[in-house]
Image 1 (spheres, rainbow, N blue to C red):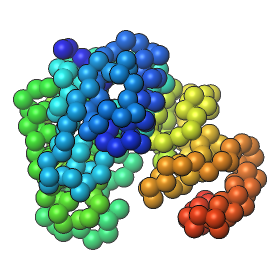
Image 2 (image 1 turned 30 degrees about the vertical axis):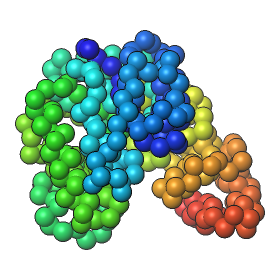
Image 3 (image 1 turned 135 degrees about the vertical axis):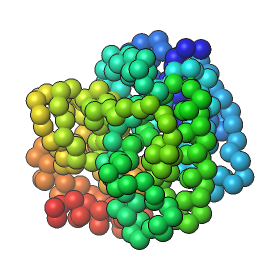
Length: 303
């Protein structure tokens, strides 16, 4: 099959997010969609032309989605030309999908710069053996990737899987993008870098030019975020606080701590006033559930 969109989603939460993202794709066009997953629960069959039920090898079972799972199954897409999307993505403009596939006429792979660079940024001191590419070679984010299923690309995915296994045995919880960077550096894949508008990380500060095409990151109201970000299309820097009104505090502040339940506070302008109200509400919830909501919002308010 010539071209299509693929998601990898393990676990109920990520399957539900994949369905949400795929629903948006189906609104924009009729691209075939593949879901690679380990169960059919919480899946709407009519959204997906292909559903591949797979089980990771035993060596990967300890890894959660986003680490180990993606390197293992990235090459399992049934399409000759694939647009891979993380489950927490929202395509604003369907023309972006055609643009990305058009790149594959000239390139084998396309992805955007990540918003972090090297391992020390996240993990402190790192064994030298885990990083051999020069600092000038950037990380690419693996949440939005267009690729052709060429021999060199499949070899890249094989190396990615192996390097990730080596790195994960030495650093607990390491993400997959460090391994992807190393595999890409030692591979002859003809690749290009996407502008940030094609993979806008809404939980990170980024400089933008023109309309954002694809949003990436957990949120409650993607259309509102898209409208806000694209209200002005001149050169601009979008920051964390500018997006807060359109996201739940729990998704925004606590995603990395595993919280998937939204605190029932809708943030609107003025941001600081509503954050202070959210802080009071979060303190109440913290008392009831002993979560870390209050301390997280205090961090935001102290900026």
